[in-house]
Amino acid sequence: MPQTKFQDVVYTVIMVCIMVYAMVCYNVAIDMGGLSNEVFLIALHELPIMGAIGFILEFFIIGNLAKKLAFRFVDPAKDRPIVMILSISAMIVCLMCPVMSFIASVLFNYNGASNIIANWLKITVVNFPMAMCFQIFYAGPFVRLIFRNIFKKQLAQNPVAE
Image (cartoon, rainbow, N blue to C red; front, side, top):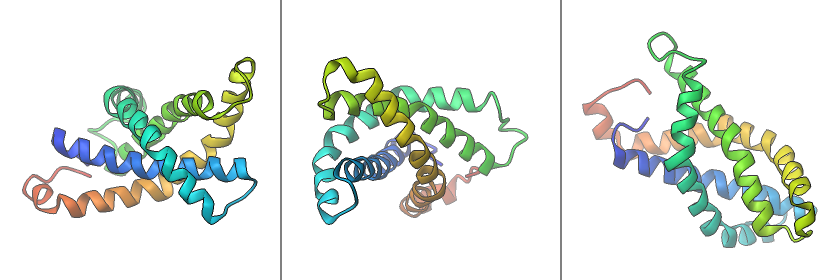
């Protein structure tokens, strides 16, 4: 896990890019009635705006809030590192999914302003299981692997529980 502010920025950029791209692909595929090669290209067009929003939210607000909430359930002094990682990851999804779903429903759904709350709730309910599973089982382990390889020397010099 990140040990410096620079590492934290790099980790967050990688995680946000992977999670946002996956979730945009998921939502575009749902909107198009299924997965096709076109979904991946359409999602690339939405990635810059949703990625920037996701980074700002996660890095400046939700990341810290998620850690505070996770530490209400787990104790860094007593619990294994993987329990800490999974707790923080789950809290981030619990916070990011509704917020990002609301932003996406405002930016990309054109069903009218009168349905914004209904659309937001529908999108959140559809996105939450995918976001949680993708984060815990795929994105999280993959990003931690990438991160460990990028910062192998720095992490070896200052080992802290991952």
